[in-house]
Length: 308
Image: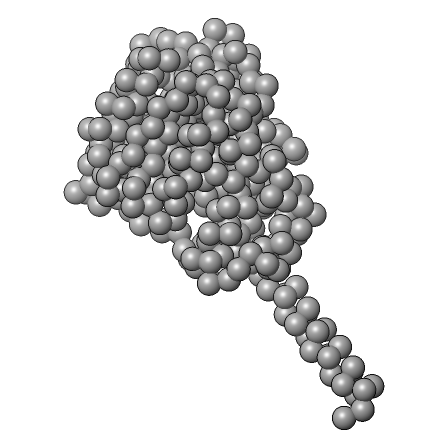
């Protein structure tokens, strides 16, 4: 075979592989970050036998004020449920990936029972809020601080707790690295990841048996172009944000979590510089700690809020 012919074959193979790789990166970017239903996320209704079933029903029956704000040109929506007795204590409850405020009803009821006002936003590209690109906490943390500012403007004496589940947990941890108002007094995170890069590297291997290179690097580059952040940036890391945090944080995780590995909670716990507590729920899968041990969950959250 002539060298020129061999060279053409090699160039052809390399070009073909490059085209396949680029095509795959666009596909996986759509799966990971473009708004829409995700086949790997279940939205099954809570069964009546669940310990949180009645809490969800009760919370959804409460009177709610529909709030909105604009950030980055997006119209964002939220529910606001005032406490039964007037108080300055307000919790902002942040939902997870491909979720919505409605799916956080059991958590809203928890804080309502504890006497808190409850603000429950739909993240950008979720629920009733505008947006097409999912932010993995990176852009969501900026929306969270906007909601915080709105609460403080309404009531300058507000004492605000951040609570987040899964991607929402990453959101509140990433927000902890910002210069937050003194009105934010503590943070509770439940099953949040250590960084976007770590979580998507894990998912690429777990769901598709793919290594990070080259695909995740390409998808990350697409995210930088389209969403404004790359997966490996400091702004996309809970661990790096927590290294600047001095607020009290309660870290919650299930020891059977196979979506956000339980080991990530140890990385987050080790990183924070403020007072910290950790609650590991035996037998709990991802985002199932409240349902698995409702009594223990309520007790741990109540004690933490009493302390801080």
